[in-house]
Image (cartoon, rainbow, N blue to C red; front, side, top):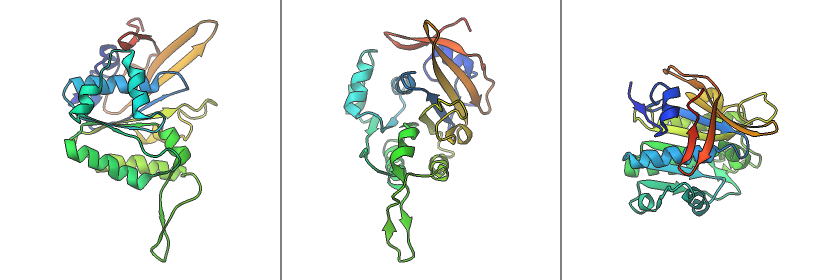
Length: 240
């Protein structure tokens, strides 16, 4: 089976050498756990390996996102200039999920992109909607937030669009702080092929852990591994 390396050796070791090509993976964690940093680190490593990437950012503007990663020495400017990296940043008040699907599909087709990141599905759940076609054929905007079924429909639609094209999908999501589900919406962890969980524990001393809880067609190490931020990005402790 062909696999996509994350470029983080200790992470690849947890997932049998890498993520199966064409899989969908959820990166979940609470605020400040490093979800977006991990996603951007994987993106940067894939760009250096020659892949084209599209990153849909709902939580940060593209400029802010790039500024945040400068501290790790990840220079995205060259990848933006040659369009190997496409940063999509829709309006932040309301998001039409049908239009978003079309934008991602168009961006992937234009540059044969192999990695798609949606950051974050939690934000999308808050401000997204699917248009509703009434009997008079006029498209009406749904006034309420999208439902769990809509969120499931969005993820499944992306998976179907890129099925067989070896496009690997990453979804970033906020953890359910009540501990009932992995994410607040409780959808992505079931729809995605893999789940990477980041945790921040404060018991007198701050401790960060990373755990692979799911990866289809893959032998995984489910240990909760310590990790830390270094000048080069996230590094997972070898002692697991």
